Amino acid sequence: MNKSEAIPVIAVSVILLIYLFMILSGSNSFLIGFIFSLSPFLVMWLVYSVIKDGNYTGRELEENEEYGYTDKM
Image 1 (cartoon, rainbow, N blue to C red):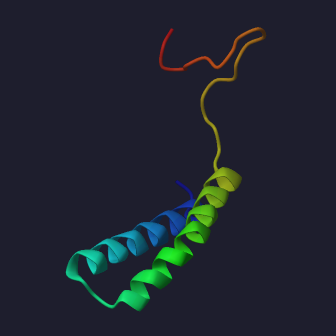
Image 2 (image 1 turned 90 degrees about the vertical axis):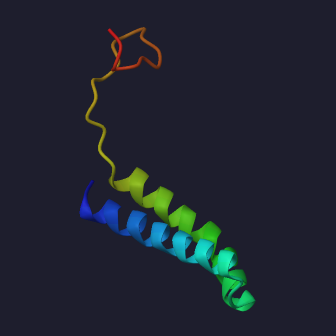
Image 3 (image 1 turned 30 degrees about the vertical axis):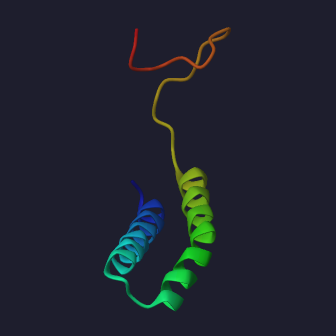
């Protein structure tokens, strides 16, 4: 995983864990609501950064080959 991919993955995962612990502990409801309303944008940032910067290292499909799995021969 590249650094440009790792930063959003780690950041969104940490925010998710903070959100989870806040819900379980019954913490400040304003902050829980704020993180909840921010979550779609965080997920979009995460998906965009992984798709944009990700590199596929598997084999390419041959002609007339559809959606093959590289782990099966």
